[in-house]
Length: 386
Length: 246
Image (tube, rainbow over all chains, first blue to last red; front, side, top):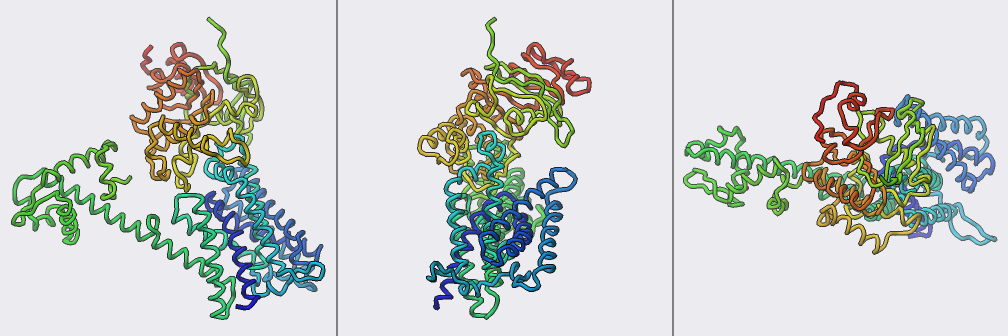
């Protein structure tokens, strides 16, 4: 690996971490859409900053862009508070307006300078190593590495200092307010950090694709854990690994780095969405299928309990009587046999004592929702897991 | 009769959403040590009243005081149980962690909860009979269990005044009994408990003090004196007849 390659991956990783942290809280606050708005509406801030400094990586740009990000949030909330439109409409009204102001400013004034919409929206990670930071004539590394590194350090510091405040104001803003841990301060703090991160990252991955780095890792992590700290950690891991894999995919296919990073993020989410142990699609489908069989089992056991006559209990008559498909009858019979709830003699099914007890207890549990004896069956039967 | 201390004092409180008043010129003095129900129809401003006392909503006029001082100076004396539906129960956290949040107020900014806070939270979980569920993810709890967790979170604050917004909503009969027993214990210990309540039938059985609210305050006082058809009719607007056991 060349130096430039290492630097690109380092920058991408730091961007991924800096995005994953605020992203986790945005996802939990159901505010993913606001990052979309911020990522567009920082444009006028960037443009104005650029006119003043003529330097795309000046700190003033970051400050002005962050300010326009926060203005977006304030405007969205202001419009929403009128009660005339809902939040999504308010977001849809605000960010195109700010974004287009940025576009007009560029079109009017930036024809002779190096600033175009593509540079702001898409970024170009491959060029990042060429823009060096020189201190007293000494090369100390790529500028964007220093910018994003600083932003990341601030983000981490804020996260460690205010983790408890962020958690309680995200989970229960009313309680946070009553406890004196102002959720409003936390809200705008998070918005400011998100805006700063977005503008800090736009050099590397572009202002639009930063949305993917904020939302996708957090959304993926959310499917895998029930613990906020682990969710943060997993978001970081997903973000960094997708960024690095994305880089090498782009290298192999000779294509856009930020494009392939985002594609990898999407694929990782898809994989987890399908295969996550408890919240994944397949796991949910399996659970639903098992529950269906278990409900059928109960119906079947009830039927057996209610009928003594042999023709009602013949294996072959099950299909016709309870109106089931062959496959379903078979899996229900197997489940009952496996649990010693029935015996089959010459194709005549009889309820065992255990089966009888189970039926009464299960019905009892479903009606009253309290039977401590059923607790130990939760591991074997999905039906009782609530 | 000895002079009773006033726990919560509300003067000329008016609260409006978008300039439409939801609470209109409320005067209310809640004596220390009562177990009080706030009753009234939907949209009567019951939750809003609690939220304005707790400084979550800013009133457009009037003031509220906790033991003679503004709420901001008396936070440590007050515990709050919001409506169960006001939070996202899919939030990635455990029952114990939610209860620990009750200690955040006394910790203040930045300081992290430690062993002492954890011990207090475990004790509160035990009090509400939820100790064995401490590591359970909160979405895996039933509605009644979630309400118990919220109650434990208030208990851990070890406050003097408890505000509860519909603690019996969507809970089974066993949990309702368990919760009311804990509330009665709190009153016995000299605490003041204020509950937004919906089930008029149980008011005389559960509470000793009641406030009728419908945008304006209709009446407030001991249940045995003022919980009658007249006040119910004034509050709910229809001709109310409940048999009140006295």
